[in-house]
Each structure stands twice: as structure tokens, then as C-alpha cells.
Image (tube, rainbow, N blue to C red; front, side, top):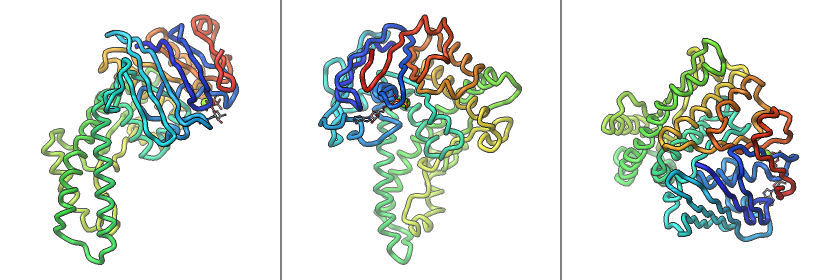
Amino acid sequence: MYLQTLHLHQFRNYLNQMVEFSAPKTILVGNNAQGKSNLLEAVELLSTLKSHRVTRDRDLVREGAEEGKIVATLERETGTVDLGLTLRRNGRRTVAKRGESLKRQIEFLGTLNAVQFSSLDLELVRGSPESRRRWLDTLVIQLEPFYAHILHQYNKILRQRNALLKLLAENAKPIAQNTELALWDAQLVSVGSRVTRRRARALQRLAPIAQTWHQAISSSMEVLEVKYAPNIGLEQDNSEWVQQAFFDKIQQRSVAEQYQGTTLVGPHRDEIEFFINQTPARQYGSQGQQRTLVLALKLAELKLIEEVVGEPPLLLLDDVLAELDLNRQNQLLDTIQERFQTLIATTHLSAFDRAWLNSSQILTVQAGQIS
Ligand code: ATP
Ligand code: MG
């Protein structure tokens, strides 16, 4: 797929900016705080309807404005698609595709696929389990947009079940058979096992690709394993088994849940583990090794999305080249070549060789203006 134009209106520090992408590789160069990441963030929003930097839309709308807008023209193999996202200070959003506004945000997902790689991703190995779950969920949504709906449902059920558990926690004595809680249990299990199985399926496909990349980049005998450690266990990948295991675990933790007033069982407690030569990467890895790992994951994401979606996704590189050594930079740049449309944000052009610069579109970003 190919992003032809991007129009930013009252978005972040952009007032009214039209960008045309005239080459598969675009380098956005500029000093700090000029709007490079903001532009990548706009593309990320069109892709996932989420920003990895903020959760509130009012941060995305330009200061002083009530609403901001991102409009894009995307070339897909099936034809040209116009996309529009309107963000409002009050959080209400409007999404439009091919000029028609859509009732459900989920119909918007899966149109523009993108893999983002920023210095924040380098925290994937050392960071919290939550950041790994968020990373995986973003990937699954790209592979299967309907997953966004499942995840949304799960979080809703979880919030409501937690509210009830909190009430129960205020009682002195746990209740063995609470009918209201039992209703929430059933929903948590039904939707939660769908989350678990989809996460498992995505990681199962990603893991071997990441392993191959990892070997190529580290040019050593190191073996990377990406493992899913679902909170409810996953010995058999069939729906009945997963649901039963989930139920059993809820029973086991029932007293603890009512005591602590929160849901202790379910995919919101999943972990994703990285091993290098069977040692957890978190303990094992030098910074360089952890970067290699994340780079391998990102390259694997590109390839997996391409396989599943049938078209190469966009790659958004936010200031990440400087964090990689020359060898890894080259691995990344070689892989991209002309295959994936790539937007690169950087503060200086020195990381790129002449051939790269000659074949790229170079845009200067200064105070929310692009030239
Ligand atoms: P760096 O090289 O430091 O990463 P950058 O070019 O990527 O810089 P961005 O994060 O894109 O910088 O832009 C940051 C700028 O955008 C800051 O000056 C910030 O004040 C401004 N900004 C962010 N949100 C808004 C908003 N809602 N309204 C107006 N300006 C905003
Ligand atoms: Mg930035």
C-alpha cells in the first residue's frame, strides 16, 4: 500500500499542512520539537486509531482549536481509498472512508497498515508486561481488525467485574455463590478466551519469522524465542479447553479476588517472554542485544502483516536509526529498500549514505510547517 497524501488540519502543532509523498522513502528532517513525530503519529492514528504517546484526544487537537483533522489518500491494490479522522477536544471522533462517514470505528481499521518503530519500542524487553501486551494487541488488530472489538468488549467487562469485586471486597466475608458475579465470570471467560487465542495465534506466526531475522542480524548462533505466557494457560488451542481452564482458575482465585477487589485472572495479566539461548532476554541482553531483538521483532511484524494482509504495510521510523549501530542500520535499510513505504523522522541526515539520500524524498519540518 502507498500513502499518497496526508493533510493535517489543526492537528498537534500543524495548522493546515498538506504533504505529498513522492517517493517510497521519505525522510523528515528537523530540530527537536518541530513536528516530526507528530506527523508520524497522524499516520499511526489512521492505522490503529490510537497514539502510543497519548490517550486523550484533546492533546492531539491543536491548542486553541476545538477539533483537528487528519485526511489521507491511500493507494491499495484494490484501488484508491480516502481516509478521514476528525478528533475533538471532548473526545468525540468521526471516521470517514471513501467520503462516507462510518458508524463504527472498527470499519475504519485495517485500511492503512503500518509498523511503527520508535525509541520507545526499545523498552519492549525491559519495560512492563503492559507495554508488551499493548505491542502485541496493536499487531493483532492489524492482522485482524475485528480483534479491536473483542478487546474493547473484554476491557468493558473487566471494568464492570472489577467494580463489583470492589463492592464485594468491602464485605467482610467472601460469598461462595454470588449470582451477579457468576454472570460476569461467564462473560469474562467467553470474551477473554477469544483474546487469549488470538494473541497466541499471532505470536505463533510471528515467532519463527523473528527468529530468522534475529539470526541474520546478530550473525551468530544466538537463538531467539518469543513465547506467549497466557495468564490462564494454553495447553490446548481449542475453545472449550481454554474456557474450562479459565473457569477453573477463577474458582481457585475467587476468595483472593473478593478480598483484593480486583480481577486476578485473565488476559489482562498475560506476559510475552523473550529468550536468547534459553535465557530471558531481560537479564541476558546487553543493550545492543536487546536492540537487535526489537529490530528483529519489527522486521517480523512487517513481514507477517504483508503475508496476512497481502500488501506491504508502511514503516514509520521515529528517530531510531541513531540508536542502532552501522551493521544494524544497514540491515534495516536493506530490508526496506523499495519494498515498504517508509517515513523516517531524524534530526540529521548523516546516518544515510548518498544512494539513500538520492532515492528519498527529503522534507524539512520546522515549527509545524513542512517544506
Ligand atoms: P524530537 O526531535 O524532539 O522528537 P519532533 O520534531 O519529533 O521532535 P514533535 O513531538 O513532533 O517533535 O512535536 C513536538 C511539538 O509539538 C512541541 O513543540 C509541542 O509543544 C507541539 N505540540 C504538541 N501537541 C500540541 C498541540 N496539541 N497543539 C500545539 N502544539 C502541540
Ligand atoms: Mg520526535
